Length: 478
Image (cartoon, rainbow, N blue to C red; front, side):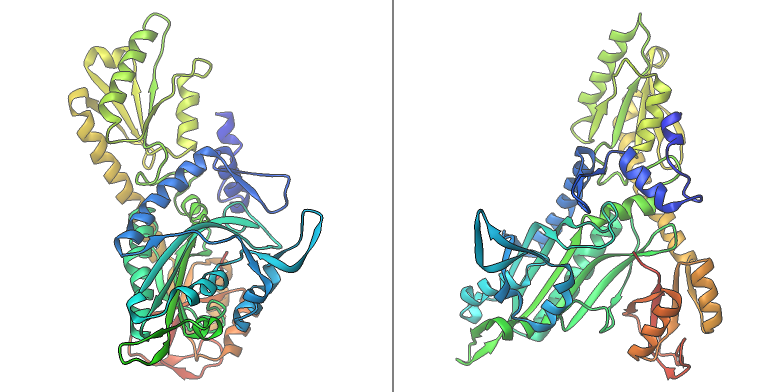
């Protein structure tokens, strides 16, 4: 079909394939504002389903949603020196309101630690106020030089959690709970994307944080995408913003804090991890449409077939997100290709012949397999197939990830692999910032994370050869 030909081959040009799929599937489009995108209804429907799964997990762990201002006064942003230095190049400033110059310029929210901490310093007085567990769903503005739909845009959507605790241990427990019980569970189970989890180096950690923990996902072009981060902020912001509480022993103490976030770039991850040359392949748990009914219509039997399709929607609609494509102006083959391109997990074909036999045809988007199903078995079969498709997409992505993690000890081999095969490389690193910088300068690969698992092995730093026990994951990244 012609519109499928308009999607560039992944092998030929991955970057153009990605843009073609995002636009042809109507997830998003460009606007007249440089670096800003519009999320179209189909893409926003996907985001809403993603939000729902993550929001449920966040609330189950005791957090509540709130909303904080978009604008941050300059004096607040400057309170935590390392924080403002880290974000300064990307901050958009408002200097005029209406016809008047502002007395103090306002930053358009690049992240919300500053404005939220200024309020926490007023709200927290006693140990009885802790822990304070708040999340917000919001938009963020960062003035990016190079942009790409969903992956890096001037404005994007996200959630950001901001919590306050009595002790360092409580803050650390929260940081890891979000990392594993919330983010990893959500990304692997709902989005069907396997991740590598670990700690960021001091160079790569969030500006102003004590420690940053990350989830890294491998795209099918061999580059890595940071899928989410969870930060133990320590007491840096508490001291800058004077967030104190009166403890049970009647002494005043600085609180301990965390922050954590995921963004709409996860939509880009879904495209790049699961998509193929025909377009999207959406995980059923988040797909806006889980099953599309395509009636095979002829003039004489059109009304009869459409009535049957409506009956099927009543049967399936309580449990499945289902739609009918009853457009007259397109032939069934065109519709098949369009809904495949849009990534709908299951297609149901129903025509006069099928009706006479009391059956329908189901077609899987992930494998292309056709299954003939009796009407009385349809409801159960759809649920079984959606579960299988979800699992299969994860298993395919996990196999790709495992195949493309390589342990390398020789720097020349490292350079060859990162250039030709890409993927993730596990190698020893001495902990020296100079070696980290040199590897990035010479190969464009960065340390994505230091894994949690300790291997109790000694080896030589991939760059300088110094003996060390620290292994890390290197990769080129978005």
